[in-house]
Image (tube, rainbow, N blue to C red):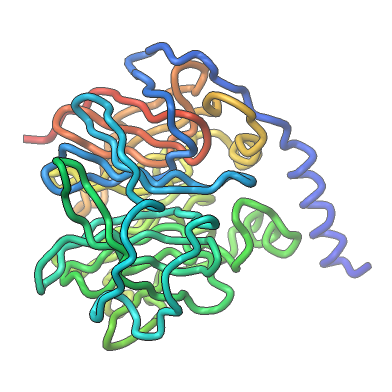
Length: 363
């Protein structure tokens, strides 16, 4: 065995041997200023729908259980299925003309999501799908009977050996960026070569951009260790990337990667959400990597791992910590925090709940 392979095997053994099941939170009672809302299934990403009365919730696939996207009404907790269960209505101008057709509903495996407004009118929802193909699914958002509904319109299949984590629409509504977190098939698992790259903080992925005119391109300056959440400034000029393992937020000029900026945060940053006051809200687990892997082994409730939420000034690249909890009660291992009026709504990539806590917008 070569020294490289020996080091890889040793590193993998050390990490995986430490990964027992994380603590489970089974009570659904409020604690420490956080109110859990149970009855969800791995609500990894949340996004506010137009009007802010409803949130779209991406419920990740786990094991043999299929994933789905639902809508949750903030005022009273009502839920409605969005996909599977919506209509198949492919249309030109939505996604790539080479899209092979609708996704397999039985194998649907959503991950990151984002809402966008088309220049030609209408509102869409982008959904990363790890199901029968690795693709970004395009849905049109509508309303029927006072509830959101979706029509599947098209897709964009990602380049080979890509494992997309998060997606953010470009302001013109015709393109998007994705975080290519690691080689395809990673999905939370650690292979020896990848383990070494993570341990030594070597790049495992980067941000891809797709536009109908220019197709795929790597955004310069975005390579890093486990790029996770991704966001685009309102003017489309800058890309923000959550680098999980070094616990940094990186921002670069979208066109050429110039003017790089970075910021340390008190968590392994996961997904982003924009606040109405212009700040970028980021959430993530505040334990170590083995804690996060241990979350995969819980069988009920929520994963009792510490988490934190920060608000980032995107121009000054400064951060304010909004929330820090040890994950011992009510909620744990946050993957997203979405501001709605005077609340933050928290999601997690694992477990049976979202959570609510207070939020004070900046004047």
